[in-house]
Length: 182
Image 1 (spheres, rainbow, N blue to C red):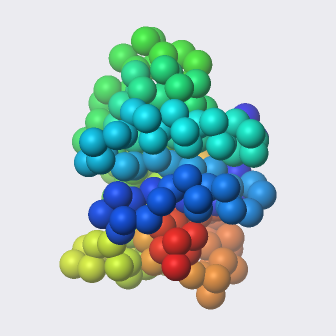
Image 2 (cartoon, one colour; image 1 turned 90 degrees about the vertical axis):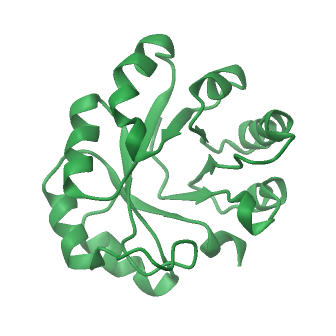
């Protein structure tokens, strides 16, 4: 798989419809399906997978590699505290790409050592979805991205004003919620 330049993170807390947003995504954008708390999650995931296949959009399902495999998603996205499970997931679902959320250089190193295919470093900038989280800032984030060969995506507070800084910092691209929903 050629990695996209951007990923849309779905978010059930915002009440937006990932199906409609995914239909309208720009080229070279993947989807991280994070609708955890909806009663129709499996049905929604299947519908989203159909849209993504039709559009050639990589789809990663968060937290549940079994669901990702059952809908023929491209991959599974793991929270930072699941990184140690990567070898077991890889053995059971070798066809899946694995991405992970990382919030520090230590987590990025662990993700690389466990065999993650790509990581999302966050929050790089101040973000609406986690207003109390201390952001890394572009300088600290750049030090982390330059210290590894693992493809790392910037996540957290991304706006068009950040594109040049994100690319200059060595990120493979970016992930966002509001950028695609607002």
